[in-house]
Amino acid sequence: MPRYRYALLLSLLLALPGLARAQVTPNVSSWVVNTTGATGFGGIPSNVQRVQYSAGNVYVTCTGVPSYTIGPWPGNPNTTTNQNFVFKITRTPTPNTATPTATPLGHTGVWSNGVSIFNAKDGMSYNNAGVWNQNAIVVEGPSFDSCLGHPAPNGEYHHHLNPRCLYNDRDSTRHSPIIGFAFDGYPIYGAYGYANTNGTGAIKSMRTSFRLRNITTRTTLPDGSAAPSAGPAINAAKPLGYYIEDFEYVAGRGDLDSHNGRFCITPEYPAGTYAYFVTINSQYAGGYPYTPGPTYYGVIPAGATGPQSGHAVVNEPVTTYVVTANFVAASLQVSVFPNPVSDRLTVAPEGGVANDLRARLFNTLGQPVGAALELHPSVPTEFEVSDLAAGVYFLKVEGAGVSATQKVVVTH
Picture (cartoon, rainbow, N blue to C red):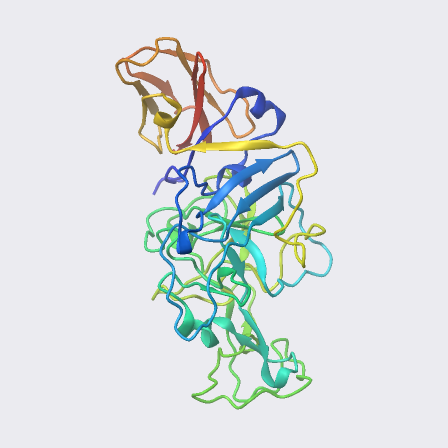
C-alpha cells in the first residue's frame, strides 16, 4: 500500500500574490464549496458558500444544509432551515496542557460541507440530574435520516456521528479525506487512516479506545468513583450504552486517545498533525464517542463555542478562497494525470488553448518546487516528481488573464 493515497477533493483559483499573503493550507482548501448555486433541502443553497482566510483564521460561510438528500426524520417535529452561519476556525491550533475543555451541547465543529457536528449527548439526563446523560445515537437514532442526520429544534441540521453521505465510508483501501474541523482548529478525518502514526502500514479503520463498562448497576462513574445519584436499572429498555457514562476509556485499547484522535502523518500533513477521526465498527455503525470528544485536544479560542459560535464577524483583512470544479471553469482546457502520482505528472493542454501558458508546482507553503514549464497546445508536458517528498502540492497553470491551481498528491 502506498504511503500517501488520496483522491483529488477540490481545484482552486488562486493568484500568486494570494499565496504570498497567507499560506493555502488544508484548513483553507478542504471545504466543499458550492460553485454552481446548487440547492439542497427546501431550496436552500447547499454546502459552503464562501471561504475567507487570514494568516490566523479561516471564515466559513454556510447554510448548514448539505447537497445530499436529507429527511425524512421519523418522530422528529423539527425541520431544517437556513442557519446563515459564519464559522471562525483558528489556523494555528494549540494543544491544551491544562484541564481539557468538554465538547458542548450544540455544534462542536463543522463538517467540510458546512453541516454542524454535534457530540454524543442529546441534552437529556436521568431525572434531569445531569449525572447519567442520554446517548443521542441510541435515544434519537430512530429519527435519523438515511445520512444519519436530523434537525435540532432551531432547524440546525447536524450529525452526531459518522456522516456517511459526505464521503465513502466503505472505502477501506485509502486514507480517508478530511471531512471537517473541530473548533480547536484540528482536522477531522473519516474512519480510515494509516496503521502506524508515522504514515506507514496498511490502511485500517481507526478504533476507539472507549468500551462499554462491565457493570450491572449504574452506581459508579467511569472513573470508578461513586455516582452522585444512581442511574436506572440496566435492562432492555435502557441497556448499556443508553447513557454516555456507560462507556469507559482504556488507554491503548484502540488507535485513538481520550479525545478520539492522535498525532499522526496524513496525506495533507506529511510532517504530522494532531487529527481526530470518526469511529465506526465492523458493521459501519458508530463507535463511541463517534466524533471529537468527549473533550477537545486543543485550546478553544474565545467565541469558538457558545452563543456567538457560528455568527462570527470578519474584522480583519482576509483573502477569499475561490474554488472551481476544474481547469475548464477557468477557461483552461488542461488535463492532469495521474493524480495521485508517484513519478511523472503529465500536464496535457487540449488543442486550441492559448500558447502562452506556464505551469509550476508549489508546496503547501506556497513555495515553488522546481522550474516553471512552458505548455503548448496538444503537447503533453511532464513534471518529474519522484524526487519530491510525498504529500500535497499545487499545480498552477497561468497565462494572459487566466490563472488556476489544482491540488496534486505525490505518493511513493
